[in-house]
Image (cartoon, rainbow, N blue to C red; front, side, top):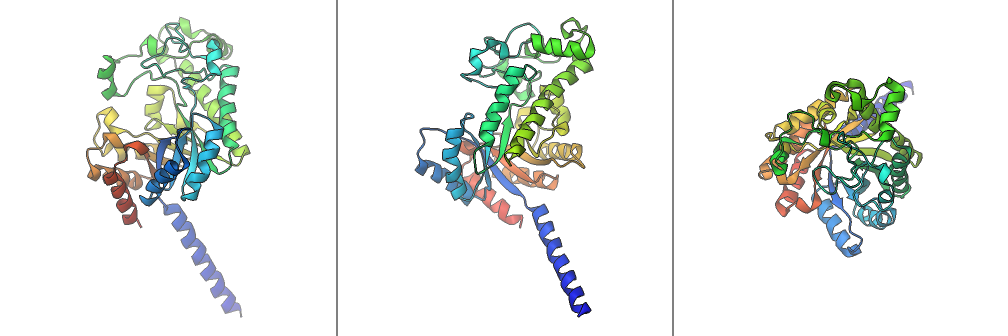
Length: 359
């Protein structure tokens, strides 16, 4: 009898061990896509079937932070076997009808110009201040309204950072820019609330700094302002039994340098680094490099990495397959493609075949 019990125990342990190993090695596939209130249920179903048939497991859906539209779309995606993430533009809120009634909520450049009416790079760069109570609470309210929607896996933060102090190198010619140093028109936020809050901690005014680009306290103040919004959003999401995820810049040190975003220090379930190699004039192997850098920075932390792949930046389907495998080999738990509209039939076939080859 004792021998029988021992054998049963060992068999049970073996089954549990195999199950744990399987769950750890499951590699998921996702896609970012944008919802349209005018789109019919039938068209949504067709889109979601297309993704599912290609082996895609989850959709990150931008509904413009509209919980009603999200409630409409979630059951349609779920019915096709897809997990849904509620994708929201966080600190950058273009066309936000509530925020636009409050000009003081917007970030201010070192030149003293507000994103409310003087937007850096492009017109849709309408950035809210993460320090000012009213603007950050507005963003967190939007997060909570999405988190309340039944059936979603996570609230997925995007633009959870400051405006680009440095653009990706391949974009500079488009704006006829040289960014060898931090330029004041792209350096944010110097609004009254940020200056006051910083002064309360460090007893100095960043506007009077000899060189703000090497003022580590001022830089960390802004890194911590974004971190505080993320940490609050994490609490909100988990209160509603949802996860918090985010689209972020390629790896922490790079994100820190380019957009005041240090995501390896956040309280967050999963990050989706946008490892868009073509933006940085890099070769496809950079997908593996950047993935590994992020995985290493998150070592011993609970946060997982899902590598973002930019479909228009790929030369062919061979590179698509290579990018997927590089992400997996370097520690990502999945890949997500930007975006659904960019996926060709050939891309979808490659994704399906590559996924099948991972088993």
